[in-house]
Amino acid sequence: MKIKVLLVGRVENLANMQRMIQHDSDISIVGTVQAEARVLDEISSSNPDVVVLHVDQGNVVFRICEQIYLLRPRCIPVLLAENPDMKVLQRAMHVGVHYVFPASMEGSELANHLKNIFANETARLSVLQKGAEANVRSRIIMVFGAKGGIGKTTLAVNLAVSLASRGMRVALLDLDMQFGDIGIFLNLHSYETLSDLLEEQNNPTADTIRRHLAIHSSGVNVLCAPKSPEYAENISAWQIEKIITALRAYFDYIVIDTATLFSDINLSCIDSSTLIMFVTGLDIAVLRNSQKGIDLIGSLKQKEKIRLILNRDSQTDITKTDVERILGCPIWHSVENDEKAAVSAINEGIPLITGFPKNKISRDIEEIAAHIDEELSADGSKTVKQKKKQRRVFWR
Image (tube, rainbow, N blue to C red; front, side):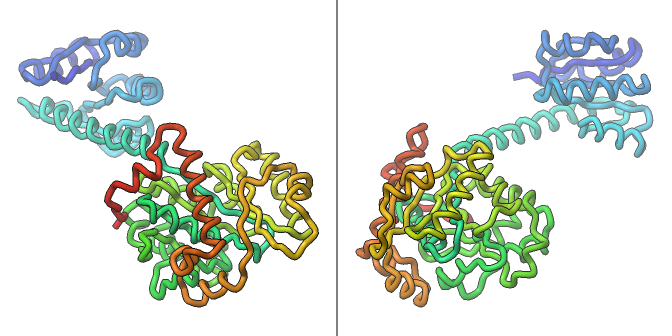
């Protein structure tokens, strides 16, 4: 398939540009344009892969490039300049042009440049498309509670392990910045933390994030919270968004354990999450805080994401009906309260569903994992049963 090229410039410049590429068998000149007003129309009619523009008309060419960048994003603009100095390069960058060459090129130089540019840009767009498709399939499960000590981290850790045991690629993020303890829950003796990552690179790339993930024996990739509370104030919501976006291209599920407050980071997680596992309990203090939390999430137009998880306690007069009435939200699932087993698992540094698979908490969390996958696979993504047949691949 030939590369379709549109040429833009004055008459004398067009003749020189044509001379440089017209004999290349891989390139087809689909049109030439002199007037600025006609460029976008010509792009629409001839659908070129590359637009080559000669810089000699002041701001006109840069204005055209900006229009191409904004309105015809699949078109690749290439500039030819008589004197491609730093000023020209800076102006080109400001309007979205990455390729600037001297107009004095000879022979097949321009044709070779265009072929390399087209090959690179085609490959880049293909990767972006695959990444976008992966992002659509990736699910973000935020685990939140309006009060500490109600089993939020236990649910997050064991939910991640349960999904991984079914062949899912799972990342577990500890975003309780000041007091996160997932490293203890999973007995991770030596591990990098979120603050280590951001200290190394303020705007982290996928490769940098990968180096800071600890791989648990269950297959879960873990990014732990800072080891000391004072590091929390240096971590921003936009950095967390960057990390989550990078992880989405590699994992089926991203499970996030959050702090019990509505910080900028938590608000960002609420916005980007697929589902919010909102953990509550059967006492008045927890229910009052939960009501405030659910109301706030509702004010953000995100209430439909909430899946209310009830931490059951048999020693109370409050019923499930009372909970649903107070919170104005249906109970999606409940988890049995077995404090002795939960504490034993933490002290041993093993997930409940691994160390105590027959325990009632383990069975409840396994059911939650199955229900999450069942609900989210309705849009055509692979189900647990389909994934189970595939070999697990860790992001490392």
